[in-house]
Length: 171
Image 1 (tube, rainbow, N blue to C red):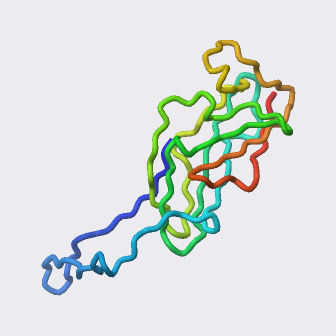
Image 2 (cartoon, rainbow, N blue to C red):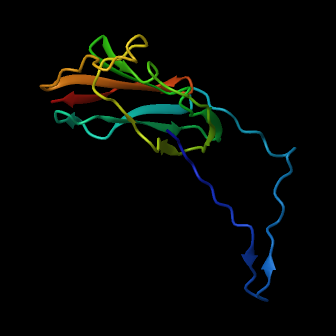
């Protein structure tokens, strides 16, 4: 899963009077430009996102993360799979955790621009089974009950946890 924020800077402008290209004036030096610092809890809002609210039998929920930098300055955050945790529960019963059977987690530090919201590019699919680190190799893990059963999706990333959960119903 990757989160992406893109900035575009134009390096050459056309001068209307004599039709010559002019280079932009030099920006501040490295000494004058403050370094981008790590995101702080007060500035980051994490939200669990699902591709639907209800799922018919056999349809697998796709889970994503939305990150908002509510601060006034750009900040960095590790958005790699090593810091992402999706947790699906029903009441106090944890059914599935994305890190239980995770393979090859990776780290990816990204800059979250001030005042922006980004959503993960590739969702994580929950296979509607119960997980634990002990059951990863099992082919017939317990299936989550449907019939309108309610589950809640919580997400954390880079050490920041969603304040609310996203409710889904399985049929």
